[in-house]
Structure formats: C-alpha cells, structure tokens
Length: 167
Image (cartoon, rainbow, N blue to C red; front, side, top):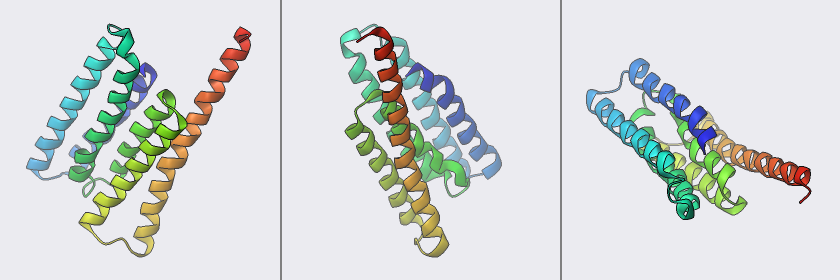
C-alpha cells in the first residue's frame, strides 16, 4: 500500500489540482473539492502511519483505505468532471489498490463498483449516446481490465517470490 501512496497520491493531487486550476470550476465546487481532498489525504496518511501499530488490523485497514479512496473519488468526480475530463482516472485508483491487496473477487467487485458509479454519475448529468457513450464504456472497461491486469501482475510477483524461497 505504501507503493500506491507513493505514486498514486501525487497523481491524484496533480489531477485534482489541475482540474481546479485549469478547469476553473465554480468557487463552491472548488472549496468542496479541496475539503474532500484534504480529508482524503489526512485519512490516508493516518491509516498508513498507524497500519502496523495494530498488526492484527492491518488487512482490514488496507481494505478500509481501498474503499475510502473509492468513496472520496465519487464527490471529487461529481464536482470536477464537468470541468476536467480526465477526472474519470480517479476511479482507477481504488480498484488498483484492491488489485494489489485483495482477492480477485474483491478486485472485480471494486472495479465494477467504480466503473458503475462513474457511469451513473455521468448519466445523471447528461444522456449517454453516440460517441460519448462509446467513450464512457471504454473508460469503464479500462477500469475493470486494468485492475485485473494489476491483480495478475501482483499474483505473478508473489508466485515468483515464493518460488525463489523454495516454498
């Protein structure tokens, strides 16, 4: 999970701050998005800082962190997507974290939840038809397929590690 925090947190920050700066959303949307972002960063920091303090809860804390990242992505996407198209990439982060830390089933469920939520939010704002429908379906498919790809890579790395240990 530390690897995800090291790479995906800066990516999410750049994505969100770019949306706020370049997309020029309404002031209320900007303030709300910054508040959500700060809450997300603080909670993720607290979890990563205390994850090993409660070793028995480490697995559950990782799951909470995965689903909280998904929960944070929803309002950020809702607020900023109309101003910044790449905001859909926020929905890739939680399933990718799930892919590295959970089972294949949990990864699929998280990816489907993220993709379905993205589609529902977009649909609530405008009709999905023509080329726009194709783009949204492509984004949703990417979320699911990328998560499964990362899960397979993680499992392959674990198998290689275990085979080198003689297990």
